[in-house]
Structure formats: C-alpha cells, structure tokens
Image 1 (cartoon, rainbow, N blue to C red):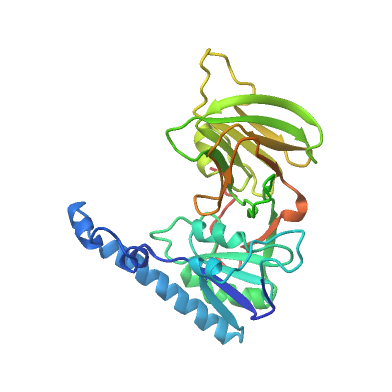
Image 2 (image 1 turned 45 degrees about the horizontal axis):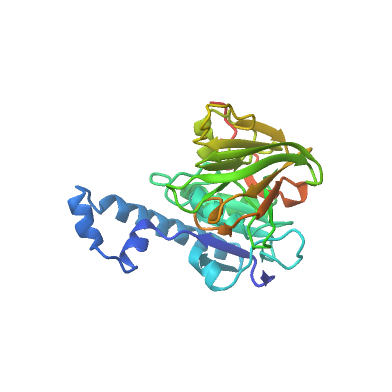
Length: 330
C-alpha cells in the first residue's frame, strides 16, 4: 500500500525493445529479427515514442507543481504493492490527487487498474499510438499538457466502469477484472472439466447449472466486450453496462448433446456465476496471463459485478482535449 506519498502515480509499460534486450534470452534478439526478416527500426521507433511521451508527461506534471512517482509494471510486484480490495481501506495506490496515469496501451492500463479503486481515477495515455492498441487510453502524446491542465481545473468526466469480483474458495489474492477472466486447464492440450452455475446475486441460490467439458470458459465485462470474447459474436456493449458475457471455448460434447450454457449474457445487477473445478490442475487468469491462480479438484470461484468494485476511468475532457471515441458506433 502506498498512501498519500505523492500527488500522482504513473504506471508505465516496458517497451518491447527494453523487454528483449535488457533480459537474458537463449537467442540473440537482433539475430532472431534478421532471421525472421524483420528490422529493429520499428521497435526502436516505438521505444523512442514512449520515452518522449514520458518526458512530455513529467514536464507537464512539473509545470503544474504535481509531485509524482513512476513505476514500471514489474516494480509494482517488486515493491509489494497489493491489489485494490473493496473491503480494505488501505489497499492499492492512493495518491494525494486521486490520479493514477497509465502510460502505454490497453495492456498497461489493465495491469494498472488492478491497483486502483475507490475515489482514485485512472487515466490512460497511449504513449505510442502508431504501434500500440489503446481503446481505453483516450489521450495521445500531443495532448498530454492540455490533459493535465484540464485535470488541474476539474475539466474532465469519469465513467464508473464495472469490474468482476472473483472470490476463490482457496482465498487466493486475485485482482478485480476490468476486461475478462479465463478459467481453464493449466495445460492447453488438456480438457477443462468444471460445473458452471448461474446464481442469485449473492451466490446463495443456484438458478441453473451444467457440467461441461471444453478448452475453458471466458467471462467478460462490458469493457471487455471488444476483446477476446468478441470472437464469439457478442455485440459491443456500453462500457458502463452491468452485463456479464459468458462463452465456452471449444465445447466438447462426446454424445453430440447441446450445451444450455454455451454462450449467454446475464445482468450483473441481478445474477452471478459460480465455477466449480473438476480439474486437478486448473487456472483462473485475470485480464491476461500475468495475474493467475491455481484451481484444484473442488475449488470454486464466485464471480459477481458489484457496483462498489467499479473503477473511475477518465475518458472525456468536455471537448477541450481530442480523445479516442471509445463509445463511437461501429
């Protein structure tokens, strides 16, 4: 926990160039690029763009006398900065000005969101928009200074975006999921065996249940409706919606029976999900591969979408800053 240490925290990505040239690999990275008929020029350009964006951001924060601290993603774990927990007043990042800035793309923002909650706002800046996907990062580098000016003058709007709360029977520490959750066997070639139940909101009444065999189960928020689960034909939903999207990944029905709970939506204001593991080596993965927990026989994960677990995303500045139109119709 870091509370009231500085005005603003910056969570930045490690560029691809940094990741593969500053770590020990079994192959020479530049030799690999050459054999793959690639050139390091785009990687160097993306790295340079990110560094320039960071310099612009720091210059702007200093211009408005805002104290700050920069973390790489790995440093969050190295400094034992815990996930935000709605039941713990001192969890997560708590800067004086209630602002955490994600500097990178959507992946960086998802990681940063795990440490943000309560009254703290999260702002995504796409540090190299020519090379990085940033659907939830509304600001590009050329508008960084104007963005900080708007923040100082309270000329911005937030959207309260619902997140999935995961309660595991083993009491593992899992973050709130802004995008999606994958529950599956640890080995990609093994069958995922489980029982999926739709329950009342508190999970104390089972409304519908089914045993399934598949390659895993996707559970997504509305914010994640444009991510992996979109490949199952779900429509893009408003980012503030309380819908929970569920899709079975490669269902296996040995007797050609149909599954009743293969692809569906539920209202997170009224219902929740319960996953009962029938696997010896299962996994639950939150917003990608970096936040995972083991599941064994009989372990359960209850998934709900409580209002109090919402995150405040800054996505608009009253037209004073051109932003990525997140909710623009397709």
